[in-house]
Image (cartoon, rainbow, N blue to C red):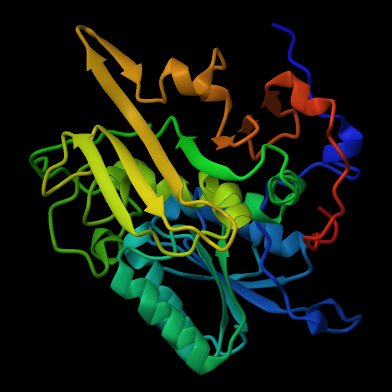
Length: 372
């Protein structure tokens, strides 16, 4: 089958999306004689990239905080003039020149670090997922409204051209009124389905395990948690859904203006009191919105066992129609046909291909982020 792709003129008309997240800096940060003073909370791993990006955006990196000296070593080396801390509480209380923070810790620390910073008048850029629980998210929103500081959650592709152009095209009716959406991910790429906590091990040099645990229940250290595999444990992470849904579901949710679902139904395997499941299929049903029909919105993650093999948990052939689901974030099904979408590219596929014949160039109605 020939894959006709919508032209670059139609989809892009500009630069491709930037993948890096940037803190939204107040305009005065870019003045000739003043730069916003930024502190990083969690600066190893993903936090390293956040600090680099905020520095490139014009920030002055004045403080770096991490409970793991080895994970943070690269960032410490790149910003030798920044003060170093292990405990974000002490950093925020004692270092008075901090004006804004990035929070790139494991999920269970997002809320406590962000709320403390906001209450002290600091602007906050917090990595996704915004929080470890719904209650924490509501508290963060409440404190942000009360303190009136600038806040942003790290959902980088939301600012890029593919998602924003995708929103415009869906709203312009590229596949007609959408009634069904499927989103899929290769996550988890860490262990899930654990039934028991592993035994204690020696804490690595440079890691303050007590500070890493923060508000989570106490337990002995084990490398099954740190530095990477914590996402699969309920006390620290939010599983595949918490890791990727805000990225993958974003374009369709935004384009269709979905709001709150009427119902949610989940099927999964391997879920325990300790850990997220091996796989899950979650079906959200959203009500009609004006002239737009109700929407069935399905999330797919993980792998299923088939004998001795593991196969990805993805939509069936009747949905994918020969397309490899691993290539796509979203399949939108409308009254005219289907759109296969990936947030990192503009090389999308429409089915039937005849949709291309009547394709117009909808106006750009969604504001673009400068320099992306």
